[in-house]
Image 1 (tube, rainbow, N blue to C red):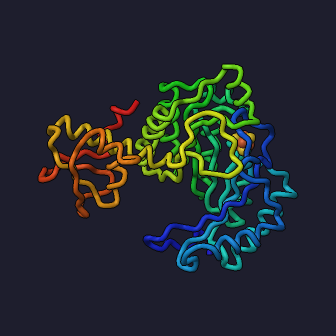
Image 2: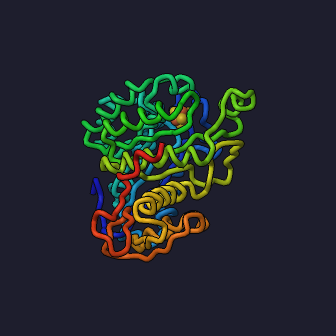
Image 3: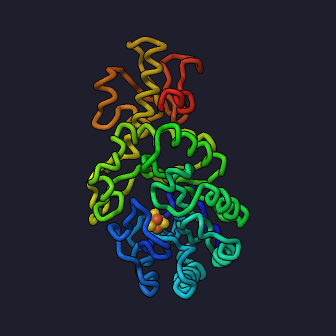
Length: 347
Ligand code: SF4
């Protein structure tokens, strides 16, 4: 069954198959995917997928996907990519998974390749855009421009697959203005989903050498959180699902500098609640009692409770309040602040 089942309330199982840097024409300045994993051999894909799914809770009730990550899937030489496609297609036909996805470079996408992927059961392609500013792309050694991202996004959309976009706040040459423009452009691409990975300096990369020579200064964690929050709000308001913010923890990761935090996504959302609460307190006074949906309480309190300890507010929760809102207790709708209301206070 292509496209798969979606069962309310249960998250999909996404089995990552790392093809670390396979298909990449060169190494981008910041990248070393082999720190996450060695590339998986096509012969090992079935076993990895079956083991992964067997280790998950209620796999029979969840949508299950194979995801080829960490390289440029559409740039892999055809003999090897066919091996990956054939094994994934077999798992799809056997009903082990419901769909296949991959990530790739925007300059390695063509109608012909997309049609092969679509026929094989691919349901989504993520493009590593990273920035929509040609100067930033150039300084990051990407080897493509923003035009490639626009063209490739159109082709993915036209193919019927879902479009994912990855962006990296804090690349060399980026300032706030450049980042805001990147977000504007990405919103125009109308992606279905996105990932926001603030740039970190990994040992063994060109960016590490540049950093050592004093030619690159990473964002501090506050600025990375702010830029990510700006992108998070703009993109979610445009109907795009944010799949991840910040790099996932990984044993082999050798981060030398930059805004890495194991709970980066939480920091971003907690900052949103901090700003919303501050705005509410400015409007209604510091004695206000803040109401949120019960599932938003952790973000309201902040990382290690720093929001509540620094702003000193009392709170309670209300199941009828939508997610992403803060409200004054007893207030009408005018006493409510939601994510879109704080966009101008972030960057
Ligand atoms: S950033 Fe993407 S395209 Fe560049 S080397 Fe890494 S995996 Fe390849």
